[in-house]
Image (cartoon, rainbow, N blue to C red; front, side):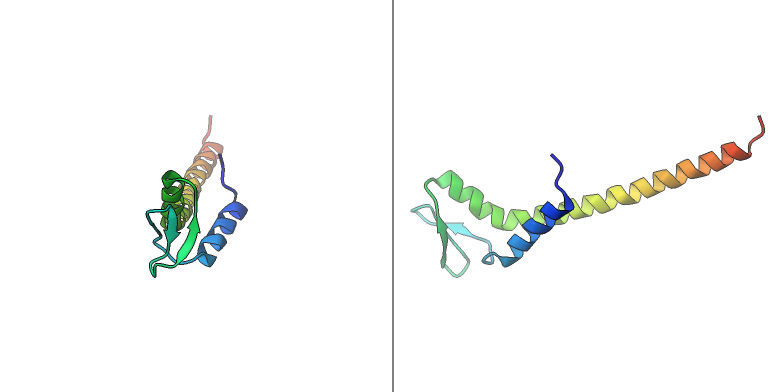
Length: 95
């Protein structure tokens, strides 16, 4: 699955607008922010754990995707430069 730039931007905007984290889970599967205010409530501990973890995980994952995309772009530029150099060298060689 590929995450388009638009999808990444949408997730980032949602994360920025959300109640600050980290979120925690209470005994009734409620999700609370650091001030103890209710953020939401779900029907299972597993769902609550996923939602609470997502509050801090999503911004971290977005940052990692951006970092890795920059690395890939940098490496692609290096490879493209090397290919261009090789082509120039081959074009100048006498056979």
